[in-house]
Amino acid sequence: MSRYLIEIDRSACTGYGVCELEAPVLFQVDEEGIAVAPDALTDDATVLAAAKACPMGAIRVIDTLSGRVAA
Image 1 (cartoon, rainbow, N blue to C red):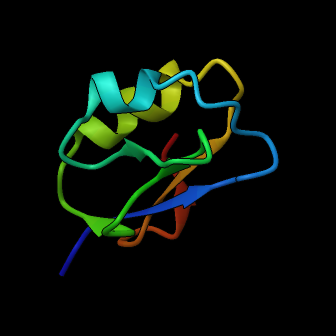
Image 2 (image 1 turned 180 degrees about the vertical axis):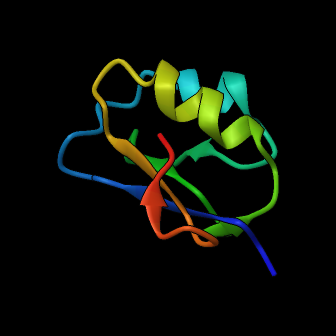
């Protein structure tokens, strides 16, 4: 079971790409300049650093084991 659920607020994302730099396996900036997470569920803890590094606060990570916001 994957531990983290990735949610991206596409209206807040401005495509800085910091998430992609922090966790290139998890995030990509698409052709519209918006971050996407092809797999919304992951066990990869680098998602937390990527979410915290987002200058727009557009990424929210839910810990599916506790149901709480992890980042």
